[in-house]
Image 1 (cartoon, rainbow, N blue to C red):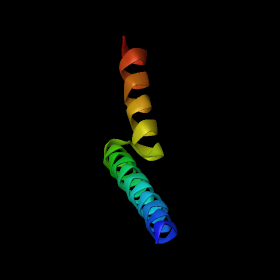
Image 2 (cartoon, rainbow, N blue to C red):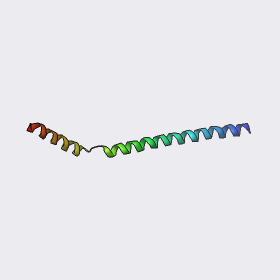
Image 3 (cartoon, helix red, strand yellow):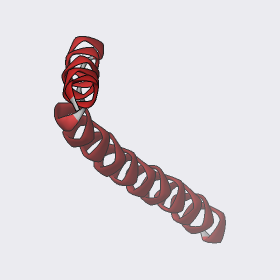
Length: 59
């Protein structure tokens, strides 16, 4: 009887730990998804650099 309780306790601890890790990884993934929305593509960066170069060249 004590052994059954001990096994259930260990399984509960493992399940709760895995659930907490899953929640933290989902938060991190959501944060990275939000960050990617604000990132510029290579073409946009190149266009901005060309615009800045043209402004600097005209001075």
